[in-house]
Image (cartoon, rainbow, N blue to C red; front, side, top):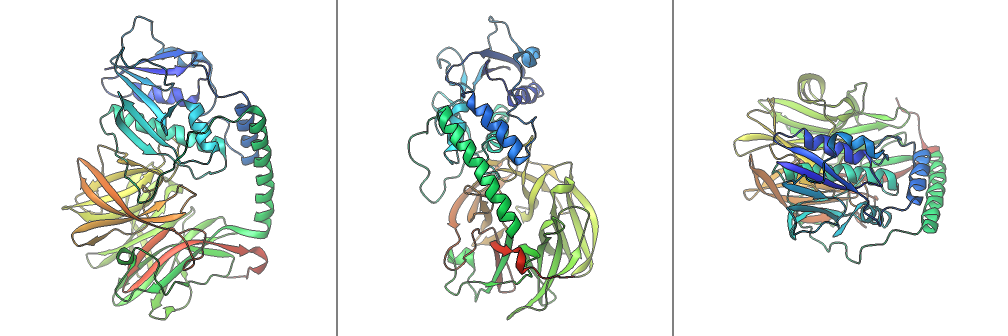
Length: 499
């Protein structure tokens, strides 16, 4: 198949070169470029904003937004007489009658100027690939760097590439409808150079405020909440319990997050990410729980040279296993407890050379499945869901042929163990549209097999009077005790020396 990429010759970026390279690497695909001026591009003042943000936030200068000379595309240039089978239109200016055209849009508008306008307006854009008005593929784009236009722009360009590649290979993901009104209103216009200058000044002011804030507070700082379910958990209630939540105390010099309880030999033990602020990384700690709360304080059980989090623990074959997040090591590893709750030894590396977040395992349909969001060719950590399957939790794990099976900043990233209720598989998910871990969704897996995965997001829970943290991030239950987590404020002057 001959594929032509329509782009603006006056604004060639590293994103375009990456996309061409990935398309050219596909079997039976020949790639060419239709590079002509498109008009109505991004104003030059945007480059000044990007340069300022690069300095202010320490961003790399060679990201996907980097401008390239047109000559960088020379290996893919085509002669005017070439007749492609498919044109991927990034500019939105091609006639739909002349050939088969896929138009890439953001909330219905084409071009990178539209994407940038949405970012500057604080939107969570839906990227859509359309052919003659019909949707070929779509995804809800996101970033962990809200308020930093360049970082968000590059994250969303990377995921646009993911969607295009999925569509070309026939693995286009579907986008679930959310149980609340979607963003409405006209597409915002690109700000004038003057307004962009004002935005840059505000970015500088925010950076100064952030510096002052970090001098006074440990940030981010998370906290764990717990309660007795009395037979009804959040999967049943779909709302915060009337009784509210009790907090797992910390000393201010560290925080606890990603709570994973397990009922083992009649005792509930809670595993947590134990983040030590002075080290700038986390270990895994554990504490036994009784009906009245924690028995003691969390104690270290797994400490490695790199950051660990999301201690996914489960029992199988009479033993306890753990798959902690170790994306800082670019692996997904399986551990076994030899002296529970400690004595963890690595049994296998399930996935390697991958930045996979919050790996979550479930046995379903006679196979084991592994869910995780993947930072693929850059992009956000939380918006691209990948699946693997295996005959046994030890592996070998095979990637799903339609990865990523979902591109959605509102429901891709796992947020705890999956549960089965009335024959239905439910998965807690992170809704990161406002910010990372801002809200918690409950999704019903409507379809899961080697042909694909579909889910329906049925509930979205946010912090409120009964959980006054600024975020709601993880959900797990064991032995009649239920746990969540979210953010908190920890003044540095209230730190105590611990361990």
